[in-house]
Amino acid sequence: MKNVTDPFLSLGYWPSAGSFGFNTDILATNPINLSVVLGVLIFFGKGVLSDLLDNRKQRILKTIRNSEELRGGALEKLENARARLRKVEKEADQFRINGYSEIEREKLNLINSTSKTLEQLENYKNETIYFEQQKAINEVRQRVFQQALQGALGTLNSCLNNELHLRAISTNIGMFGTMKEITD
Image (cartoon, rainbow, N blue to C red; front, side):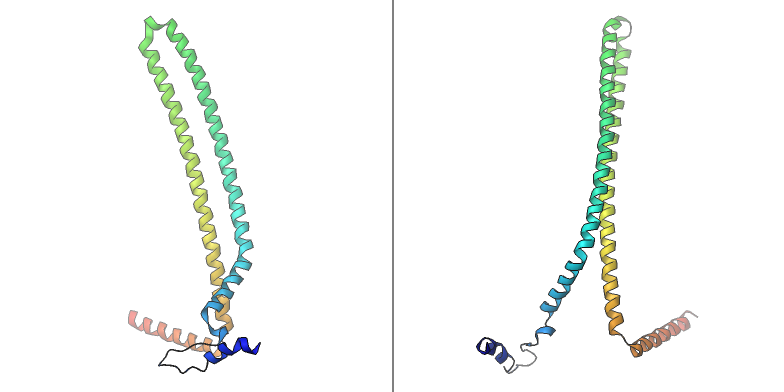
């Protein structure tokens, strides 16, 4: 065991050239500290984020189902419109001599209005999906920001003592007094 640690211990005895040297204090090195912090964040934040994302996914799926139902209704209306079109076409054959141009105009209006309705429903579905996605992303961002802010406040509160609090308050009061004098 001693043979394995000897090379690492000897690193601390190398002469330093200026400000360059090896940091043998493992706890003071940033990669280990960062990996511990990231590990804790992943361990504790994974469940919360996965729950949020699952809830959002269910809402989005429900919205998609509703949109599909609306689409089905629109397709049904389209089918009814097509049936009506077929009926109009039969009547057009009977009344071709008297009002062929008027029947054609009605047919085109019916097709255009049905297409517009279907297109509007498709646009509504796409907008709803996009809105729900943006809402989910914003909620996740807000939750992550709140957790990071709470962690930072916890770190600050644990690091500050009464003397530092009083000095910070005195400094801020002095700055406010200076700002008040400037505005007056």
